[in-house]
Image (cartoon, helix red, strand yellow):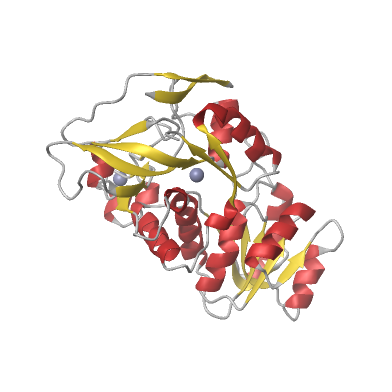
Length: 348
Ligand SMILES: [Zn+2]
Ligand SMILES: [Zn+2]
């Protein structure tokens, strides 16, 4: 089969490798769509502590079941599925308490196991058993199925941020994840969604498709005082910092309402992970700072329901479509900021 094999850092080759054979507890799927994620870009440039080379990356994927191991129940040939890439063990301290994304034995597709930038992928027994393989609804495309993964991370983020009816929510960053956050905040009942973004092309894109109530460009406006003005001086109830900026995290501490919640949803670069802040802001404001980064299999199932029902639109985010042979071009497009989501079609 054809696969994009990351041999070492920045050495990606599209080549023929043996088609994997599923063992009795496994499923083989033909990959119909795999979207490029920020973490694929990081793995390409810097590797990852869980990646041993050579590795096929790609974890936002959907496809069709083409082989089912003899021991597998509940799945059959021809079913269209999305696969949640973070595989919990189901039995550790956190799994037993319903916090699968914190699993002590977490394995991930595209990291520990080969992922979706290939014509076929084996779904391992642990993934099959722990609810990672979810059927696509009949009105859902493969591309939308692949985008259930970032939506699942946004759902986890907003659950822990407790976004609810009547909230004023600030989303910092209008990348693909920020755009999904805007939509989900509305679905959860936020009555005012404020977007903060520096790039004018991203502002135009978000304004056109997702219509935040207020848009602030910090290069022309003082974001902190503007947020205060929009909230009668209180600050925002919830803030999601969906960009890798320490400055944005520091600023968010000055924009939040007393007893509000801030989510550091975007991780900071490895070489710049520190921020500086006045700890008395938290002491007197009694607000909460949470971070989230992944999702659990049930978030993926929920994501597919939200996509199928039309409550969340992910297809607008797909700006570029490429064959597997152009994966490197896709990575460059995704990191340049010219694109929103780039989808790779391994079998087309
Ligand atoms: Zn991802
Ligand atoms: Zn576990």
